[in-house]
Length: 135
Image (tube, rainbow, N blue to C red; front, top):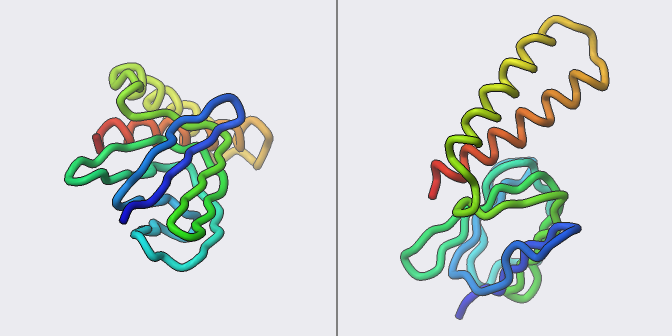
């Protein structure tokens, strides 16, 4: 028996298929999902969703959202997502380094919209790099 997995962003269906195992980046830590999992609704952090089909693992970079597990169906609704296979590793590393510098430049400054945006950009860049490295 397998899981049905759907990863949906506002502008696209990122993944629609089956999986033997799914690991979600919930805000309280990673959550592993296998067939027969109890019903669940969880908030997701920016991070890497891991999908196992047989003995093959693949990764999807998620930019926050929610996941619902119900009767061997996993539905993931996210702000944005990218398959690791479609991410340019060099560009992802450069974006991560630039985001780290932007956050470092605002270190010690009071909270501001610019600081929140820089931290969010860093979190998303980190998720993209992690997805590429996990593949």
